[in-house]
Length: 238
Image 1: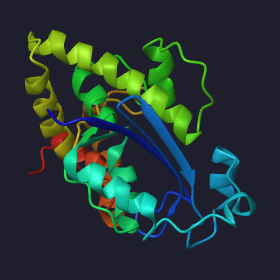
Image 2: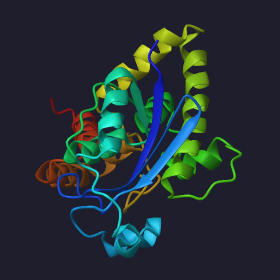
Image 3: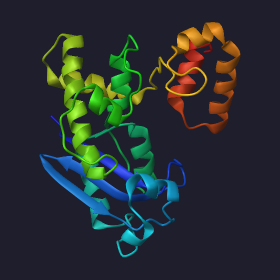
């Protein structure tokens, strides 16, 4: 069975097409690798305020693309399975640097999928860390710290998946996780805006115009496949 690579990236910003890597951390076979890189564009002030990685910190680091690190990571990705939270973002950042990700598992999509009663208000990594009572002494928004939280969240989700599927066959569970991770996920509850904490299904009945406006906005942006899928689902648009 293929091994799992728990991975997190820190980047110059959140633009899926333009931004670049400035730090990568991954864990495989119990070993953690963390490395900084000098990005080809400046790190934004917003990103620095979150990660505490500044342009000065990375100014003497090597560029990621074409590095031995990148080549070794690509070999690992070819042979194993990437695990990331909101994997589409990390995959986009890796692809911006020329890497390909053949197989992946997204703990964000799995968390939403298993929460079919919409009991979890938010599904970001740090919220799940405390919601699932993950007992780790790590610093949030450091790539290596987030990898450790990611690994713990994955193990919790894996156990939930086993209970739901009523099977102990790890290969079956793994394959199902990969399958779910490939598809857009259904977002059942708003965690922001005028309808915060409301079920999207209820908003579709109470304020259909808002969902139609939100869908148009997301389609114009063209990057948030989960929200586009969700809005079309609840608006009954094929």
